[in-house]
Image 1 (cartoon, helix red, strand yellow):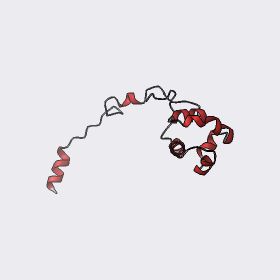
Image 2 (image 1 turned 180 degrees about the vertical axis):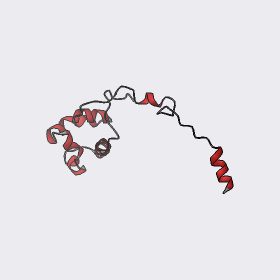
Image 3 (image 1 turned 90 degrees about the vertical axis):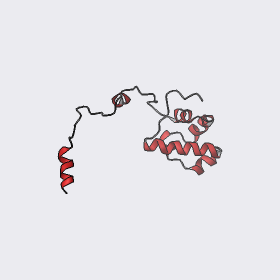
Image 4 (image 1 turned 45 degrees about the vertical axis):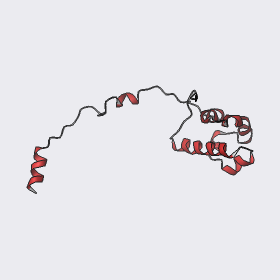
Length: 111
């Protein structure tokens, strides 16, 4: 017990006046947005890439609204004739978009 009191008395607590203690952390949030502001079906599918953008016309005519695309199930996409791997990509990115973990970029990355 005595050693505990000794440690706590000798320890100095330094409180930094800066809100960000990691160097360069404040700069992280000051970057301009690289993401598309208004997202529709074409922007969403172009953001996914990997050949999914070929189905833009089909999805716009059958589903129509981007919010409906976000809650579309795999069976509906299968009935539209979208291949399995591309259905998986659409559903995975739609789920991430709903959670706020992913947004399509303004310009797709060149790979």
